[in-house]
Image (cartoon, rainbow, N blue to C red; front, side, top):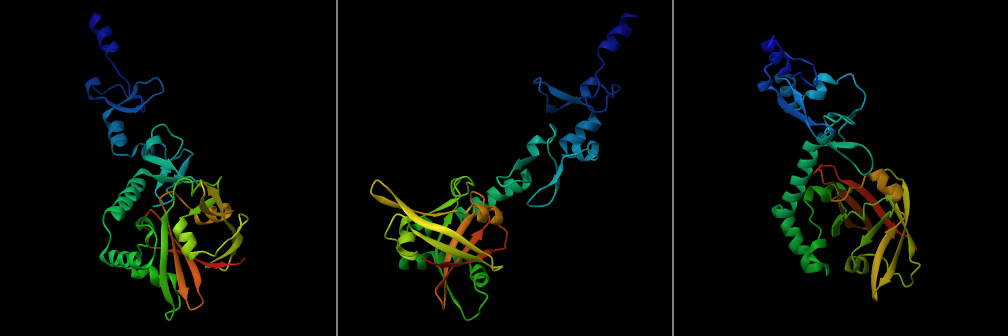
Length: 275
């Protein structure tokens, strides 16, 4: 009788399938519960959890599945089991942790090592353009070809800037232009009111920004304002790189966006100045 009671008290049931036939010593920790303890899982359920197949195996018919914006993989959102398998994006949607880690590694690799052709253009730019090294355009021949659809056109990289958190902030909806870059490549502005700049994208849609400056300790801070709809449309993210080019003949300035995901696609927008 006592032995039966002892056996009953030592039983442990799986948090997911309620199986209590397995040896308690074979149970493994799953996700952390709100109580602070871990869900105890039988070997079968624990194996699915460890392999990242738990929601796919047991929650396939539940609501909350969404596509990763980068790779398209289905991720079960709003589930305590998979809360650490994805990140929320600033402009909506989610990205799985695998793609997030890949984006970080690609961005880090780009910062640490540049391709030979990029290095050559960087050195050429440094000799010709009086801007800080961090804004030298690091572009490849493939990117230059994508900027100009006219084989007879000449494309000159001007400068680039990695978007900061404030540059990609929808509430601010503005892009700070580096001072030397603004004064060397953008139209002159004599008053604080600035001027309007029209932007035409590759589809022929026209955007109008406000280009101006404000004073900070006697120094000018140049800024493009009114970018909210544009930022949403182009899915700007901190860490993306904006690059400016000049295309001749015509003197048109082109703005390109290089995504942190390392996507080979280059987004291109023609930029013309209108005071």
